[in-house]
Length: 303
Image: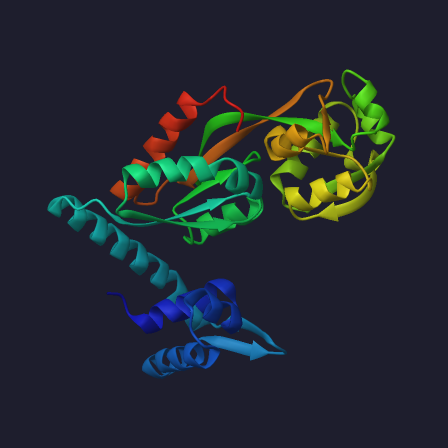
């Protein structure tokens, strides 16, 4: 129902890229440019400054972007209110999840939810914890599920379950002969870490600092962007890492990797995050309550 030109402009403004906006909207780049130019003609002003393959919002663009976010929020609230009056349960929810959660926890949870609520369409965006927080702030997603602490006063953080992290090593590694691995043990060997902004990396860094060490003391050999890439590198003998036990369940079963418990143990919460002030559609409340009950029921299960 909302103005298509405004939707296109708002997407470009959030991404600061005509190319990325075109991909996100499933449009051609010339079509995106045309829609933005029409809006500029309507207001008789430039909305973007374009210099050296980089775009920024003009003052007028900043004003329109701020109001556009409020307009789209009101549209969502209106549609949800009408659905409640008519008794229709449906619509689309956009969920954001960090990589570990998206790959190892959500498939079963969302599969069960969609079986119970077939008229609700779930869209999933995957990023690291920092990316999920940014998407919530920009109203790109309705609900986030993250694997690291979030210290944002505008967001509600609700812990859903605990995750155990372990030291993962090749099957013939010397650490497999020990009952557990201490921080000094981990520091002896080449270490493979996740990228900046990753929840796993942040949690490991906090763990090291709490016990008198730091990331700088590790023999960092590689920085990789996903659990799958890290598992492959460890299997190839390129180093060891600290990861969620859930991410290596298959490899442990096949005996292609070994997990050594950390001493002291390391756990972290998986948490739901959402905006304090944002209107929450009935469909989101359904998903949130379903997820709460799922996590409560399976609290002690392996993820």
